[in-house]
Structures are given as structure tokens and as C-alpha cells.
Amino acid sequence: MPHDSPPPPPSSVLSALRAGTQTLHVALEKRLPFFSERLDLECYKQLLAAYYGFYQPLESNLRACTLPDGFELSTRLKTPALRQDLRALNVHIPSLPVCDTLPPLDHPASVLGVLYVLEGATLGGNVLRKHLFEQLGLDTDNGCAFLYVYGQATGMQWKAFLDFLGSVPLDAPSRALVVHAACSTFSCFEQWLERQEVLL
Ligand code: HEM
View 1 (cartoon, rainbow, N blue to C red):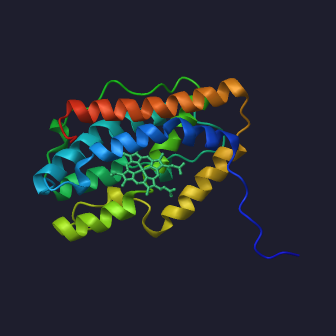
View 2 (cartoon, rainbow, N blue to C red; view 1 turned 60 degrees about the horizontal axis):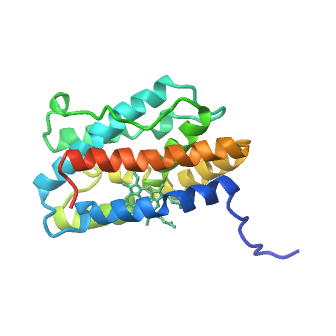
């Protein structure tokens, strides 16, 4: 029996998500100031506050909606880590603006698309975390918990999410809803960050 069988091909919904969101990811990544020369502590605080203004209402909506069967949201919420960072950086959380133009969650397929973006966004975190430690001396206990929210379990959490995504039965219209919601999540997030004037 062969020992190193090739990894299974990505599920068709995952391929569609990657194809549908790749351009949006590249565009947003370029505009985020993490690797910019202008990144200082003040700029980072403003960026994190803007992230909070998007994640907090979106995760609050996720908690209130019908989740796809078998998905455990409570262990995947990122707002607590954002709060922890903002408190560590002495940002007054109740004064922060929150976004009211959020992606749709009116169908379990749309919820999946939103979750794909929020889960995938943890993947760049390790690179960002190392950079922030080098640039600003920030670590998980003094302002950088969100960017390393799953710590060493990041890969495992992502794999578990992909297994879950691949296990949900989706017909073609539902797959289109998943991709639409994922694209909408990227767009709403970018537009919100733009309005908060934290993008390059
Ligand atoms: C400067 C900021 C960012 C960097 C450096 C970054 C970097 C990365 C990296 C290295 C990966 C893994 C690619 C791979 O393993 O093949 C990734 C995947 C991903 N990122 Fe980002 N990212 C950033 C911002 C974001 C943001 C803000 C979001 C969404 C809110 C996001 C959503 C995603 C998604 C959904 C994936 C999964 C793609 C897949 O299906 O494999 N990223 N990112």
C-alpha cells in the first residue's frame, strides 16, 4: 500500500471560494498597513479598533442566526481576543464605531461564505504576529492576541473548518450563495476599513 498518497482535491465549493475571492484578498492585503513604514503603535491601535468595529457586529449577527448544522461557533469567535488587545492597548471600547453594512446571513449557505472569510483570515496571522513583535514589541499578552487567535492550533483549526465545509451538501445555487457571501464579506470589510481611514 502506498504511504504518501496525494492530498485529496479541494472540495468544489472551496475551489469556487478561492477562485471567487482571490482578487479581493490580494487587493485588501495590499492596502492593509501592517507592513507599511507608517505602522506605529497609534496606527496599529486604529487598525485594530476598525477590525473590532466590523467583527463585533458581524459575530453578534452570527450568534443570532441559524448556523449550518454541526458548526461550533463559540470556540471560533474572535471578538474576545480583539477586546483583550484593545484593553491591553488602553483603547476605550464602548466609544468605538461599529459597522452597519454587513454581509447577508439570511441563508445557511451565506453563513458558510462569511465563516470561510473569517476563518481564512487567521492564516496570515502568524506572519503578521511575528512582524508586529519585531516592529512594535507586541505579543499575545500586550496587544497581539487577535492576530494569533488560534496560536499553534491555527493549521488544525483551518483543516477542521475545511473538513466541515466539504461535508456540507450544497447544490449549485447554494454554492453560488456561499461565494457571493464570501465576496460580500471582503467588500464590506474593505469599505468599512476605508471609511475608518486605516487603509493605505
Ligand atoms: C496583510 C494582511 C494579510 C496577509 C499577510 C494574509 C496572508 C494570508 C496567507 C499567508 C494565507 C494562506 C495562504 C495559503 O496557505 O495558501 C491567507 C489565506 C486567507 N486569507 Fe489572508 N492575509 C491577510 C489579510 C486577510 C484578511 C483581512 C482577510 C479577510 C478578512 C483574509 C482572508 C483570507 C482567507 C479567506 C484565506 C484562505 C484562502 C484559502 O482558501 O486557502 N486575509 N492569507
